[in-house]
Image (cartoon, rainbow, N blue to C red; front, side, top):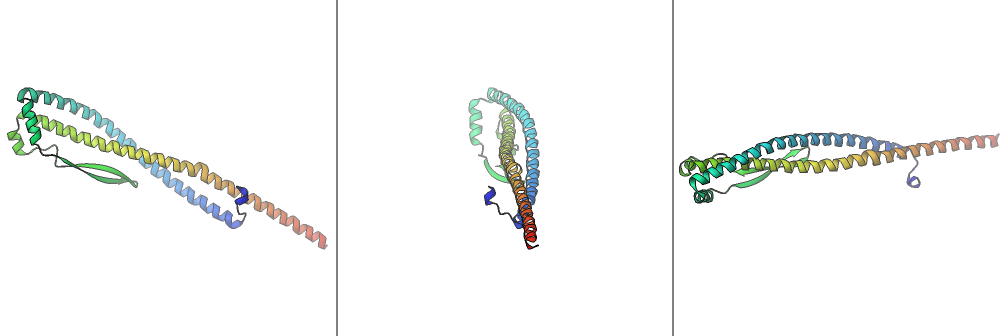
Length: 204
């Protein structure tokens, strides 16, 4: 490695500048990583709470469906299900520290039924539909947050690799280069002084 290093003061100054730039970049990467880690743990906390609520909602929805089937019959439930309009999802995004996080939207409010539904649909089925609409909304939100967590985790992993590379490989390598250049310049300076003294003695 040393044979390819230019032993000049200019190279010494340029290498010091590179270390300065790399150090500032390293601090920015660490700040970004810290922000993403905080975002990740906040999402993880939300998902844990939502999964507990979602499990309770799922159990209540299942119980409501069993009651609706007992009171109104399976055929009526299937007929109502076929009559309901299909819901379409759209995917948007939000930006977190330069990272694109998905945001799923359902066209049409799942939790709100029309006035005609409350009249034409038997009450047990109407209640069941409300319960499952709530459950589906929760399911979509959890899926959205878990997808965001995976993307955050992947980005944190990339940032870890970059910061480790800069901190443990690139900067130490440049510091060794500076040390080598300084030592070589000192040796050259000593040789020059010895040569000057020798020439001076010959002249005398």
